[in-house]
Image 1: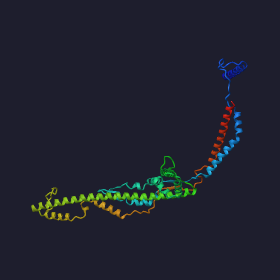
Image 2: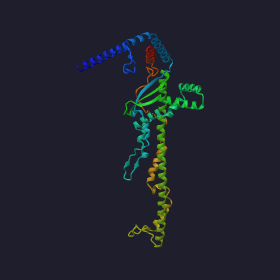
Image 3: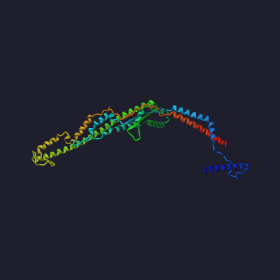
Image 4: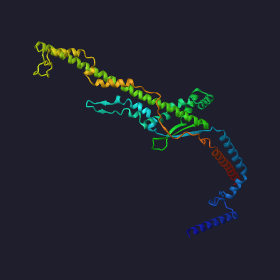
Length: 398
């Protein structure tokens, strides 16, 4: 009801306004007498006129659409192609590095501690070297390492060709250096190892992007092989470094224990000499049972026995007689000298659950999408030109 009254009111105002315009034309008055009654200008655009204008400009719209689509197709056909090969890897199984683990564990007795009561304290110092998650994490870190990528690209013909073209186009040395750094940075992004799922670190998707389908496949396999060799070498180097550190530690312990043993031997020898002088002065040549041996210079053994003790102490060559722990250290050092690290030991730091395969679809350019977008842009450009011409022409008519 309210809407009907409102519409009726608007119509009444419009009729009254038109009547006033008619009266103004019949009885013209100056604008000063009627300042509110100025000529009415209709700025509304009729949709019929708009469609008519678009129809008249259909040739222009078609031409711009065709030209933009043709440019887009030409660009898509000549743009650099990029293909990505991918694979899915997980942590290695025990049998993938069993030989390496056996070699590492052969050094376990060197790291264990043997107590006086016969018990053995097992060391965990070697556990990180044979943990599957640690080995796999080392492979992923090496795969994503910029230094490894640079070393690989510097021996890749495709990248070197891009690098040569960049050097030809560069004018200044500063620009050449900046462009070369940018080139390396862009290509670093083409090799990646990313978690298959956001919160998982035991499964990764590895990929490499190249300019051809076959290059992508071959380069990814070559890069995996290079990283595998590097991880293998790093694992053996870590084992060697750990053993060298342990050997240095044992040698230092041996020096300390030998020094202590020599001091004990010298002290005991000096005491024996003093006891011998005392026993000889007291004419105690034979052992005496009722004389305690807790004195600082015990003479209960008698002068003859003490003299034999002095001779024995002076002839001691093996300090392990004084310090038994030297026997353990010597045994560990001897075991380290006998064992040798096999550089060709089998070690696989990952396992495929999806092997590397040749890509089916290229990453770029998306030719069909580029052509469609080019056609849409051309159509919109043509429509825009027609509408602008229509708007300016209408203003001139008004």
